[in-house]
Image 1 (spheres, rainbow, N blue to C red):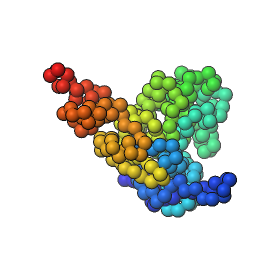
Image 2: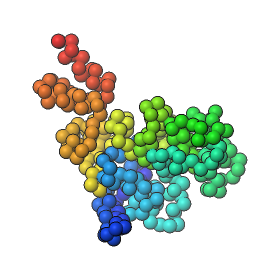
Image 3: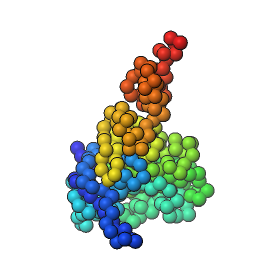
Image 4: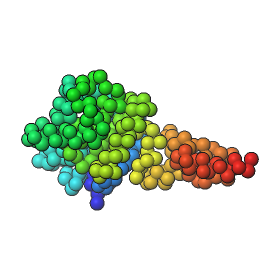
Length: 282
């Protein structure tokens, strides 16, 4: 069942200096199923962040329609419900942390939804446990690492009990350890709680772990499919200044050099398995 559906949507904004319309999205149609983990890829300016913000009505399409669980984002009467169901996590966690104590920050969303106090307490505890940050509930957010701050930002969204979480490059500002912490949290929420995940990322190795990848370019969809289907199109992606996972790149170059190797390798384990027969012959 489609949970989010964009139907031929476009989005434009006025250029401040020229007062001309700048089109960011042009006739985009896509769908995301309930419980799916989708990675959204594209270089800067491709439109991926813009379309993600239409999923919870932070932005409204200039043309076409976006539906969340069959609710039209242009219908103001359901705006509150749409934003409760689809949470948005930004790249910089500091832009989403609003309180001086972790548990107060996580409680901010449910409080604004008018949730009763006793239920807020339970939601905060459950959300912090879900991101493995319960022991930090009385800490000051500014004392936490980047990865911990991002997990608190995610907990704040979880406490609102969304069906879907959209994450706009949540690991871009993190070190490798912070990236691992956040990605583990995202996958656990998807697998254990069935939360639909839309992950915008520049890291191809993160996209490999998704159920499906949508690649955007110049305000439209370039290609989509499973990670193997998408990353097998190395030439197409390179033509549009996009990378592929390091393991995929290595095997692609070796094949171009005449080595007999599989068509698409996605990760280190597959790369080792592909190279092992060649190395044993050497």
